[in-house]
Image (cartoon, rainbow, N blue to C red):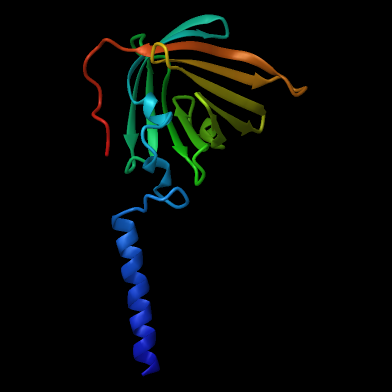
Length: 187
């Protein structure tokens, strides 16, 4: 009888785990919580973008495509330099952590795998997403500010100056692209 009760309990646990995997919870406290809140600031990154600015004082222009991926848990920004062939390409994955205002960011680019570690962490405060990378060479932070008036963004990237301050690395104005196409949002 005990063996039967144990097997019944074990079967129930596996069944519950399978059910959870097939239909993620929508509460704000567990897996799946990040995409349960809609619309949120991360959703405002979804779409086609023109990214224009400067890196170390040099002009830079990228085409970017933002879309939800991995069951909607991340916004992926695909950024490609408009030069041919592209000098820079990046895939940036931004997802909310277990709390609605904490974000985790994975920035992968053509500089290689060594520069994709560690992931960044940060916060959403109002219309601002700020995250920091704790690189072994020193901290690096990105600040993305959403502008409700025009639906665009400002992206500022900064490097730690070694004394607790920050020095500019890159600044961009990010506007909706008028070009059609792009990847369809993932669900």
